[in-house]
Length: 324
Ligand SMILES: C[S@@+](CC[C@H](N)C(=O)[O-])C[C@H]1O[C@@H](n2cnc3c(N)ncnc32)[C@H](O)[C@@H]1O
Image (cartoon, rainbow, N blue to C red; front, side, top):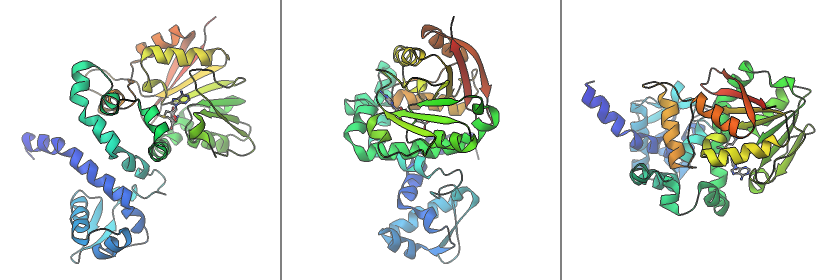
């Protein structure tokens, strides 16, 4: 492929992303979990237009998500298997989220965002992602499932790299629907966990005997008595001022601070982190940070940086301790 053709493929990649999103929403991979099915059968099962669905499936087969035989029958490939909702490292929840109209509309405002430095989601919708999700319960659920799905991709790497079992009680601040905390409680038989997030997010979550669920806002306070405060994919959602405000509320309780985020790599490296950073500009209005930037934010909130543990997934466990 020429460099120009390569570039053209990159330019068109949002179209492919949207096609995968539709396949995820229709649950095509789940329908293929037990074996090959014809395009017409899949159209019937998903109440789709047979010809249009066939065109979607053959496109995705050309990108190796499915395999198409000579009779318009489709099966899952290794790649497409991760689109099953119950795949061990399922991408289904994330794929179902990224193509939502409210997210697409925010990305459409990227140019204005780059020109002004303003958050694209707010430019597109007049409210923050959190206000929007509070007003649209379905979008909140889709987002929470996307976070749970994305968490599953990294949880093993976190546990392999960092000993969370040395704490008695971990408070997961902004822990979503508890996917990470549940995994930690299952991994460490002595560990107790407190899940803390917005009331509508944690409503109905049950973490069993060793888990407690608390609703509230981390801009007001966070539950006391944690030996460690875990914030996974929280600080990257916010600018420095809001990050410091959240961390000061955490700091009031003492305990170790464990941030799970990416760390921005040197120039020309780390495409996932840097695209993730743009995603923060577009979505919640936050940013990915270098380790020095994390250290500054921690310092302003009353923490000393202890270190950053790398993990196989590219996430880091960034540890702080209350400054003397
Ligand atoms: C990017 S998600 C990360 C969720 C989870 N930690 C994970 O890694 O999957 C950010 C979380 O912050 C929560 N959040 C946003 N504003 C909050 C607030 N004011 N108080 C508590 N939680 C909040 C959201 O509800 C969401 O669950």
